Image (cartoon, rainbow, N blue to C red; front, side, top):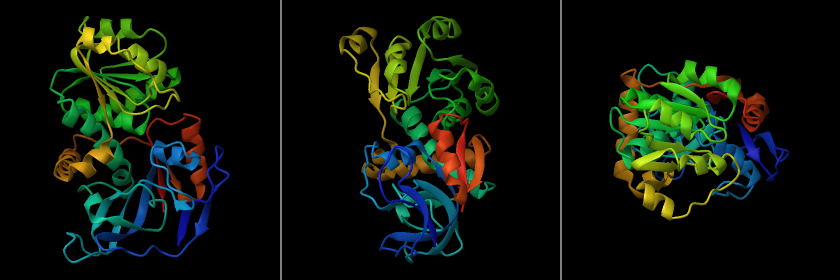
Length: 324
């Protein structure tokens, strides 16, 4: 089978290549899936560099999530050959066949294509875990979402809007504002550069944001501490800026807000019942037509380099999906 293999960690993808490999062997509790589509996530790029918190030793097959059809499964897994599924693991999705733990799979939402299914899982489970599970998102709240052109940021905008929140989408790249507005339909789109607290204050009538969702870190996190309302929550999702910010503890004390760390995958592993409930809630919203993933481009797996390079250059507004 063809698979995208990371043979060596590097900063320029020189250690990554499309290779011919034997199909994976299915372990007990796993489901063998014929992959039709797989989506690119920022951790996939970081793992090729050895810069993600999970650091698999090369060689490994890249790819967090995919959509496809079940080939083989245990009788008690809840899946049978021919079932259309979405899901994934920490690696292995960018291949013609993947072996995935049954607990990490769910049915493809009715009416969704394989490309849509592949683009939905990780982004929306991350957004739901952060906004709803950890922050208790309520209708009418103001939510400031950074990195709003990325897959997770767009999912957070889409989900928050579907649940009745008022959404301020923020990006550090000015020319992406129109694309974000078209794909996420937030209440406002702002440029997250320098002192953007004044813009947030003006939009919210001085109330500031009840929830700040931050996958960027660095200077954006620093300024976001000034944008969080009293009693609000500032969610740490990641550090795409490259700088891990620090905060003096007197700031959340005086301003009365909480800093919340979000690791959606680990949350689901530690609390499997909650993880299953989150997956079901996202699927219900998708099947009701209330949420839909934003896809920037669909590429054949043979053109994987173009997708990775576009992500590294921050060109995307939405997800890259590879057809396998």
